[in-house]
Amino acid sequence: MAEHPAYPVGLRLTGRRVVVLGGGQVAQRRLPALIAAGADVLLVSPEATPSVEAMADAGEIAWLRRPYTEGDLSGAWYALIATSDAVANAAASAEAEAHRVWCVRSDDADQATAWTPATGTSEGVTVAVLTTSARGRDPRHTAAIRDAVVAGLSDGTLVAPHHRTRTPGVALVGGGPGDPDLITVRGRRLLAEADVVIADRLGPRDLLAELPPHVEVIDAAKIPYGRYMAQEAINNALIEHAKQGKSVVRLKGGDPFVFGRGMEEVQALAEAGIPCTVVPGISSSISVPAAAGIPVTHRGVAHEFTVVSGHVAPDDARSLVDWPAMARLRGTLVVLMGVDKIGKIAETLIAHGKAPETPVALVQEGTTAAQRRVDATLATVAETVRAEAVKPPAVIVIGAVVIATPTTEQP
Image (cartoon, rainbow, N blue to C red; front, side, top):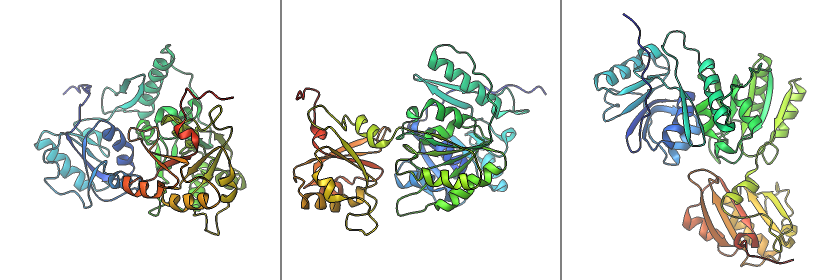
């Protein structure tokens, strides 16, 4: 019997039930695109990676914390089967077939009724590339074609880039504040060439969906006061995979050297004799305020801006910030990782001379579709954070630039 090619189609999943079985790497890579498509996602899995757990905690998906049982695909329009249990995968696949639910199998493409294409976006266009049959599927080939088309759409040439040889080693890539379009061109290229990606929760997670299936994604998410991967374990993973001759990308949010522990990783790699390329990223300290309409400097208002970490309170012996000096500054103060400490921070700044009416803005999930801005003053910010349920990640901007307008004309 002749084998027929797959029929390409775009699914409109807004408000429609999608069931994902398994909370591992495959789910971590595919869920962001399903969420972005507006799907009503149900995850069925006894456990999940920290990044997938964070999606559930944020209410982006529903999560049944148990193995698959018959009937879980009831009402589904689309299913992604990605568990490590071959028996459960086969049973779920049979249920999907019986109920005419299009089903992707991460473990066995031949038994699937749908395949996930290599996808990319440019200027509002989604490019999806599929092989013609299940036999001889080459994810590197489809990913390369996808990348060539997206690059061509971006620069107007549609000329495939020259083949680049993968170079063993580690690339420390700053992924920017969250919007996948804000990663640098070099960072995106290195990500496309990677064999292994070790990704933070705050990195641009949508880019993980563009990686071909052969790429190993290691979740190094650090959820505040929750699950985390110890820094030493991250360093060891970087070294181990690089020594195997693989091209490794350490994908971090913002810039690797702005409260990102980037230098710790560079030092560990240097001690192990591993070559490392550092790719700067757009720091959330300047990009997130900008995305919310706040300039960190403005003529006649602020001639300086200072970025500080708020992950420990001002009265904590571990704090290295000179908070009395911060209170005396006339420019803009940008606080990262300080949502739960902002009350104590505001209290300390006021105690050392900062005016209680100083404007404050909190920008949550900056540059993403979930971005929101909450305004307050130093005197009211603690209560505002509680009342508005502001959660990390959020960038806090303190100073007159919060209410600056383009019409401000002072020398």
